[in-house]
Amino acid sequence: MLASFLTESVPFTAPTLDYHALAPEIILTAGVVVLVLLDSIKLDRAKAFMPVVTNLVLLGSLIPLLTLAAEGTDRIMFGGSYVVDSMALVLKALFIVSAYVVVLLATNYVAEGDYWESEFYTLLISSILGMVVMASSRDLIGIFVALELLSIPAYMLASWRKGDLKSNEAGLKYYLMGVFASAILLYGLSLVYGVGGSTRLSDIAEVLAGSKDVTGVPIVTLALLFTIFGFAFKVSAVPFHVWAPDTYEGAPTPVTAFLAVASKAAGFVALIQIVFFCFAARPDIIQPLFFVLSVASMTVGNLIAIRQSNVVRMLAYSGIAQAGFMLAPFVVVEQEGIAALQAIVIYLVIYAAMNLGAFAVVVAVARRTRSAEIDSFNGLFSYMPAMAVAFTLFLASLIGIPPLGGWYAKFGVFKVLVSANTGMSIALAIIMAVNTAIAAFYYLRVARAMWFEEAPEGTDTSPLRSPSGLTAAIGLSIAATLLFGILPGLLSDVTSFGPLALGR
Image 1 (cartoon, rainbow, N blue to C red):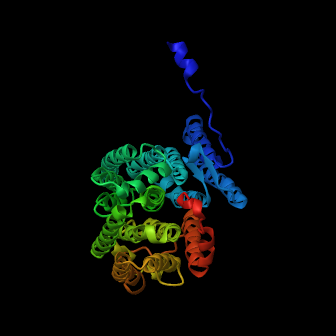
Image 2 (image 1 turned 90 degrees about the horizontal axis):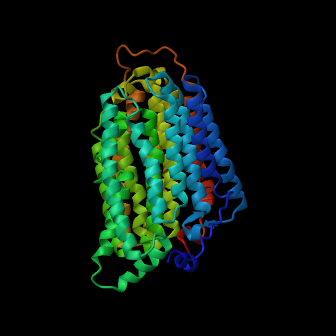
Image 3 (image 1 turned 30 degrees about the vertical axis):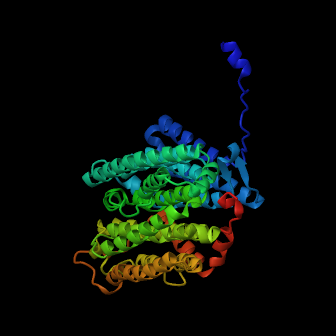
């Protein structure tokens, strides 16, 4: 019987691997191995080399991205389950550059604190590897594996300040909420697989499109709801946001910057993959859902941010509100298609630049004041003028004031909402405008404290030079924020995705 089965079975055919397309993933994987071996062999002597090796790995993984972009050929592997196109290249570059900036601002922070240094960088690269895989996955299994690969190291990094109760609380809350969200997501993905009969997004999309004409299929609605709810946790959308403020405040500030930028961006990339390539076939379900998530996130985030006295918690609620802005284009996925996709990616890139810069300034100021309370920023211009100017620029960009990059990010979202010209999109554009005005209040409150308030008594106003890595992180963030605002055409050209970006 066994011999009969073996002779009748279809012979195994090894998949064709495009090593050029997979080069960034291969380099990052090799980097993780090198970091582990370096830590195991050199022990404590490896600490000085870990950030250098990490940045070399990150820069090395950018090289194949540049050669692939120059070549301009879309590469499809595993029957369409893994795609390396222009959108994937932009998103992979976003993750890698964000990690590079995080390493710059974390090097001295980690070395000067009571932290395990070597493992910090190993976990960081592992999480970035998951994000890079996410950018190309077009399959339910690939998306879930990538999501867990990027999330599990982040859970540990959030509690990296092991002797601090707040850091332990931050990691525990993030872990417990993350596990709960993963269970919801996995249940939703299992329903999606049951409905579509395949794990490949393009195949499922065809089945979902046909389900419009089928009556009595509440399982489709349930599958889409559970899946989107699972991803909503990663982007800290209301009402799945409760973990974010405490986690951001308790985690080491460089880790907070990583979670607020790279991890949030990875959540949005997962939403992009699942919505644009699969769930777009059922706009009757996803558009009202994203309308509610967008309005709730931007409104609740902004209103609670007004009451915060800690800059990190304020930026956490600000990030929730910004997530609401980035969720808005999902409402018009049917009408705007690639234009909506482009608006989201542009917002992600600009948000990464201005938010990383803001957290880098918080790290620099906290080195002197040992506090992230808004009152500790009083009179900052009188003794750290460069940091006050830099933070003001980032806050102005978060508001959306030209010529900083934030204006173009918000303009792109407004444009696709107005162009869609539906009742839902016009209402959402109006709500966005109101929320932008609300956000200006608490951003400008911090700016006023830095420029017009007196420094607290006992503040050390002697010259203090920031570490070169931290200064470089702030400089790169300012340059990107200004460049994307003054020359937005550069970003528009890079994100001019072709029809393949929507699987067509």
